[in-house]
Image (cartoon, rainbow over all chains, first blue to last red; front, side):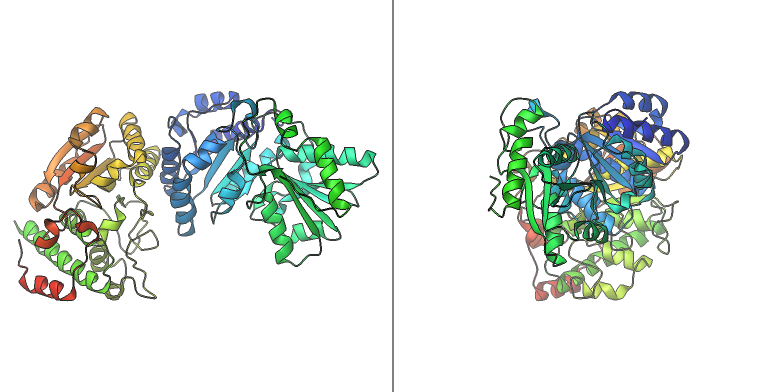
Length: 323
Length: 273
């Protein structure tokens, strides 16, 4: 139950809960997964495929949540967040300030998960555009081992959430998630003295590889996984950043647009921390290149080598320009 | 028919109160709020809706989503009269410290949802209607939709959904006042025949004179109490700016405001129907 694609592990866990809890609904905008096939077979009265209709997905989810159901609304991430953005704003962000609604938006295809399907299926905007909406939590897990805890968080917090899930199966990077709390928001995966590199989702995996490459050159950077981006646990983050002269974020998002970079750098400014900051991600253009994910990263300046070199320049005090 | 006389009297009172609100709040969508007065009056005072002003979210209530929120300021006096909130707010619409703005939302007791943005009501109502069915509850979900909202694609996603899932606990009333902000709907994109469009999506459709209290009451009572195993659309033909000649004849009446003098003259002249 703890290995496999993030969505399958999450849905398998939701399925188990739905078998014993009639207050859970699962809506899909004609988007599937192997685990979903079992869920809809067993819980057909509380599974609805609304069709390729993301606007109605959000609106039906809202109506169900107003009737007291805990609702999961499942679709491909860019279409969930952007086709239905105004529905999310009006019926989830605005309304949840007046009424408690447990709506959990599950967007699959974070970043460049859907590498070869092109820019419509890439999702480099979602963190920043959902971040700009009040009242919605943002979860961006990197490891399916976190899913049971994330599901508990979803079921126990009566407010809207956006879950940004990778479309691919990712290897496990957590050894002992038992001690971890979702509300901490982040977890230190590797210690290091020279800098702190904060990743989210797929890019946490990449951050570990960057750290290994740099270690071979004698540069020892810590790697932290950020999985609850909003609300940010400022205290935990401050403790984590404390003592690091250099803090770097790495995300599959456009940089400089209030994604993970904006959240962390904003906190550093607001708390008046002395750390120098660098945000790494995609520059301000869509990716039309064709190839697998790592190829797309490499032609956009985000290969392991490029990132390592950029970080080295940053630590040497050189001015670093992402784009 | 005592009830119908009472309803006519109430509708007249709501009309006057709406004009009084317009004096305080010139920015309200007056013309659009006047076309649905009889519909709202029959729903609340005609024993159609089940509700409890002391407990606005009572589980046993019928749900009413005002999808055309802009054009529902005429519901303010009704909700105040029924005790959802203090009547003092009727003279404070849009003023600092009031709970009532030019466009209502669910921060106001009695309003279920946020509908300042159009075209959301039917989809949210579908979710509520489906939820009520899964809870094995008998309450109904009513929606008041402006005809202009039929231009929103999200409305048709919901109409398809309700038809397919045979949401017979959903009753959607189209306030068919035939005018959007800039023109008659027939000149923008023709919407007629509206009832047939619902029918081909698996709904039952009715056409009614949206200002005729008896007809509205009879139809609403009938569809509330007799399930046809499909959702119900009621096309209520109405007049935008009802009761105010200058507005009734103006395709731009949506954003027209009246002067205080005009309002005073109208309030003195107006007699019941």
